[in-house]
Image (cartoon, rainbow, N blue to C red):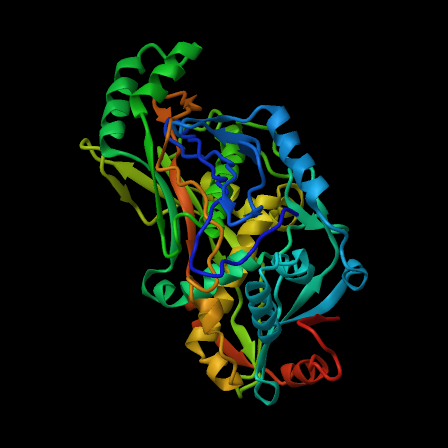
Length: 468
């Protein structure tokens, strides 16, 4: 991995890598990614890597989005492969309960700042953790320990850092920092991403579809006219810095979901077809279903003393709701979901684990959701105070700044349309991501199974910031 240093002052640096490109089956939002290197002192930050493309999409100097050339994707992967170090021997083999100490990470990062050292890869990748199952508090050691499945990592086919055996993306220190630094703000309204057509664009689209209804969708020119009528769409991010990797993941995951939903590219797994293929010839299909991804956790388990916590559940679910548009272009959600849209959403939810292995961005989104829940839990339950562990250096964006990315503010429209047998039009509107981390942290159940886990996971004679 390319080197990353913590600033000795409050210098923030960025490597840009962002996504946006819109889909709207007559109105759908997507994203593209840009990648741009900038120096921070003498170091290069590498979450985004070097080059102009990431994830198969790109953004030019003017912010115009387009599919990245295959060569750009390969270039990113090659750069990361050449820059990556060997995984430490004790982190290569899979372990169901790998431990990462927050106190140890704080000390390691402080040493990096004091000695002007690059942050080691194993810290940037949190020892290869792929999910966090337990949050354990040790007042006697003044520590909070994160426990979950971990293994060695590699650069995957799309340039993402993934597990050697599972192919799922590893957790990133950067996303943990964002979750801790924004935990209080997340309590006020959650963490959200949305990509929406403007009311003016909807008005133009309504007029164009009315004009073309009699003629039907019989050529590419008609589809082009619909996209031009809809025009640019707006990206909204709430709850986390819009320049953060965390925010980029939300937008990118929404983009990938819509690409699959709209049938713009082959579905990478069996049993999940595009939504547009599901609605062919269906005269009862509602006009504008909206799809989005949200948190999906069972109630947290706790030992009753607040010293041991367990995260349970898949983490992510896909949801849908029908939307209507007024003549002025304003959107109104109905609170209802048509059966076909719900079937597609439920199928994606059921296939989410498999999809995460083939499309790492979905695993990254779940990683971010795990981080957000942990951040909310630590703040809500006062775990740092219970542990006697000062985590202020992690929660201070000046002491522990995160990598910054370019912020695409709008995207151009691309359309995919199905004409109904009754002469109507089938469209799909914008979606997004909703992370209600405090809602997850509010739901808890007491369990006697956690005390033994906490006892077994204690540091003992282990030194350093992580152990198996």
